[in-house]
Image (cartoon, rainbow, N blue to C red; front, top):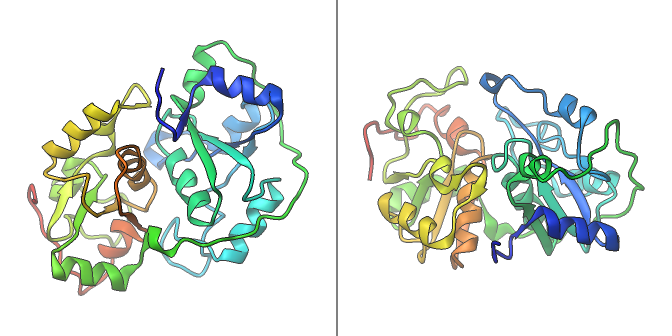
Length: 283
């Protein structure tokens, strides 16, 4: 059984549910090629008592880029409407195992929730254990979520420009090696292929196995293979800020002293006309 303080096993979650001390969040989200409808799947089956967090709507609606950080008021309103307060014990999961849940785990923590964990293995592991599910819409009792924003957990475009130019902070890119190297086109139109100068390729898939986060020693090996020291500051990035949070979770597991997530990620960087872009294997 994992001793990771950021994960909870299905059995342990069942116990917490019986004690009535946990709020459960379905954070499923999928890329178009995955051909899955997260909300439709939630309506068909989800963990009893779970609410659905829509990662396409709890965003900055004025931004041209996907999954950009919502305003503090918007997040507080969305979380409160789901019946979640910043003081609650929160468990987040997704339908792929470990794909989109870390992003919502990071969001809640960034906006001030203090006890947020991820279901180890996600909904697939829950179903594999033969545990109960329910269907239909959730009907949470609204409450107040008081934001305590953590600006040190996020990087914006101007900051990212400085970091790339200074080359003093490690950058970990969670996209596939093919996209990182510029060998595969980006899925969004108008986005150049390649990576930020000085970035390291660390596909999020290298940090998990069968939808579960790897053990600490295996995580250290993955970081070392990517040329990243997990004991030093790291900025995480990906396509649109979702799977970057898998790296963020791995770094938290290894007690990284300073991990930040580049919210706009490659969609924002690769859409600019003046940001430097490199191809090939990188650092």
